Length: 137
Image 1 (cartoon, rainbow, N blue to C red):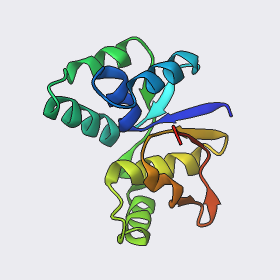
Image 2: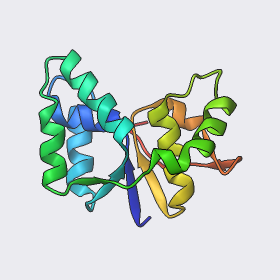
Image 3: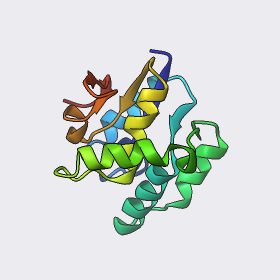
Image 4: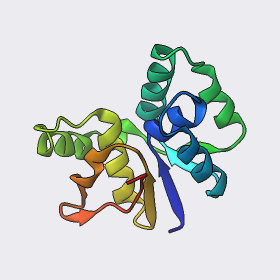
């Protein structure tokens, strides 16, 4: 795997010592080769979750500045595939952040997704392909 995609869950867990997945997320992030790839909806979700749980959303921006991860996704360009994905998984329901990560996994075939979200066990890229995961289960 050449690239690692970053979901909000491990990012929040890394920044919040009270999170049940904190230790696991810290170990994984230390072992991964930066930069991890993500998208703005993931960052917005992580900031929201950190704020709601008494954390510091600005810490997300510090990680960007340190080069830990980078944003490599244009929602405007990818709107049609995102709409298709969200329609396909409407029963889940799929968030915009999740749709963007599935789409990123389609764009970067040599990736794995760093997540704690079990919905990614159900999501498929390119219709039927399993998304390689780095997950605590």
